[in-house]
Length: 481
Image 1 (cartoon, helix red, strand yellow):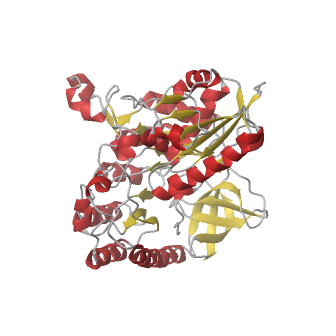
Image 2: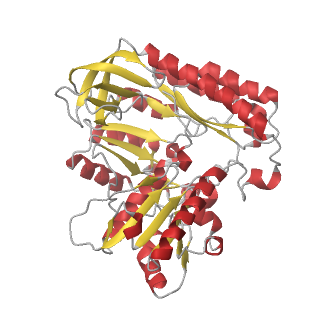
Image 3: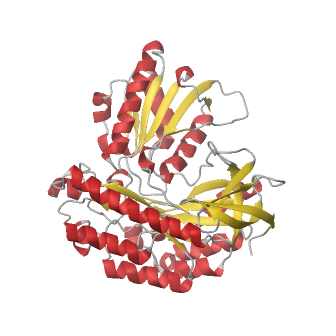
């Protein structure tokens, strides 16, 4: 399966179906990573209690919120264009209020109020509970800003409202922030240090989803393998905790097992892993439980040790390859996907060839590949010159994409003739006579509808494929076993 579209620039207008008499209209757009979409569900829940229902019609909104991404310059430029659109609408609806949420809000703070004259409210990722108070400031004619980063998991006590949901799959946030300080990345500055969520709260949320008919959850975090619950607080302060707190702490592999055992008929995924924090205990837990999907998103960013060092990645090329070998020794057919940055400062042709050779070694199932984008405030942005010409970046990126396309096609072709367990998530985009879902390895499978329904777990014989999609025929209903 191949994914080459930049997820940080894909906007989604989120539709909320609420019971009750909410009269104020909220128009909410989200861009970026899965965490942003999960956060938008938290925001919708907070605003629902303030009398807001969502609308898909921008022009009728009382409040417009855009949840932003700062990971690449292209993502921020997309947001700026959307704000221009909002400005045009606001001319005919001057009572409409506009707020910017998320990582771009955290990075630019009050500058957003100056740059985009229509913005009334700027709210960082840890300040969404303060939105009702900020709205009061806005309604009183004052601009409102809250970009304070938290030392705790901020939203563990809020039941997210599932937006634009298929009512089958859902995200469950388990940890926030990142301590790794990769030189290209804004996340430590926009989302703060790592802190984890109370496992009891996580289990409660999954139980609520299960009771409502959901069949799959994705445990979510910027660095999900760093999950560590010892009673609350930043992960970096774990060594300062009491001996009892340290002795009873729960790490990610233990949480994953707890979820898998607690909900044996619910399918479990997780994202995103960092190679330096990924442990083989996690892989063994995956292997031990049929309901944990056999796919690991394992961003590498580069195949060159020189570039990895410049990125402050805490793993070498050789360590990464050894980790992949260990994963496949425990789960031979485990799907592995990647993130790759092309054209990082000072990247030579030899460095680029190292990336290509690493890809040939791993043969990823799919990946997200981008040209390097200089981000203000990061170590690379401050200390390194973006000195790779755009034409060279484009050439190298095209070579990486072409190689990934070939590996993806190989993986899909290798599944032809096999029987796959597929959770039906919806109707195929090409025909309402076909259903679509994902298999255990995160590949999309399309098959004739016949008598099957959304939410069914179906055994599908794979009869054909495209470069990114498996095609098949349903055999029967099945179970996770």
